[in-house]
Picture 1 (tube, rainbow, N blue to C red):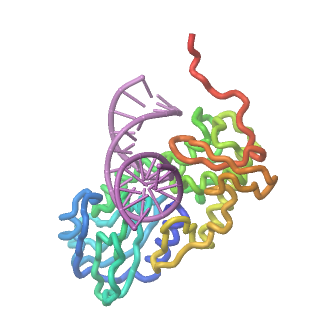
Picture 2: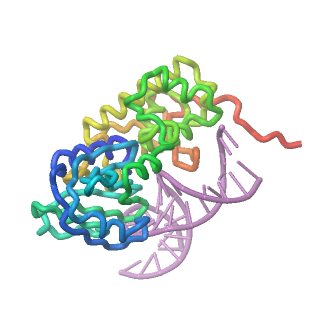
Picture 3: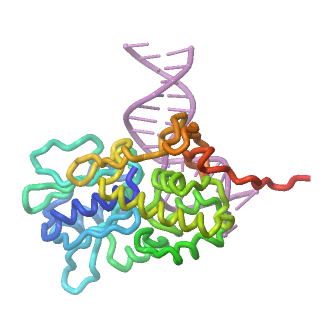
Length: 284
DNA sequence: CTCGATCCCTGGACGC
DNA sequence: TGCGTCCAGGGATCGA
């Protein structure tokens, strides 16, 4: 599952090799996940890739503009199973490859996505800004005070807030659970009940987890691969995610799983004590 | 504002 | 061996 560290790893891989390359042609497979397939096949050829940016879980390939027109960009979201790789044209395409972008150096930028939960759109800069305008802050560019301001007054459960891309952008289910475990906070705690010390622990935990995960090129739990086709290694440092029934690394209690905000949440019932009062709609 | 439910999609795990 | 069923989840959307 590509979250911030995985997308950052892909972005770095693409940034190392794509800028300056010109797009010769585009070939599409299944197109049901593209908002405008024709815009992509018509609009990409002839453009030069100028830069690669990540925003939350989105990637933007900035492209050369034609005669004073607004700057175009290819906006990409990897969804659950999306992979972007730069490979020699001679190499056979992997299964579920749905977008092939031919480059002027004999390589191809390929997008494969088994479940097609991803997105890809060719838009001008204003449209990209508009589309991404609702995103929250970059977790690694936010100081502790600003983090507290965003979280402290909210009534929602902390896990739901961490997953909400309008609050912080880039955190998904794995890194939310890993951060909450490190901060010793139960996923159903209401954000506004978190004490200052807990908020501080959570802020630090998020930073450490994301920074370390980026160093290790992300987590390959299912089929995540980076732009060069390599796996990440941070899954080796996972402490709770996917470890239901196994022993907590801190206290040896058994890791539990419950659904929070519609997603599986793994936590240690001992290190991350549940809130005492659960909200129940009063019913006469 | 916050919640749960629903949909999109495929492969892998599981039960019989 | 083979089939059916369930589940995983990012994000959008809808109704409560």
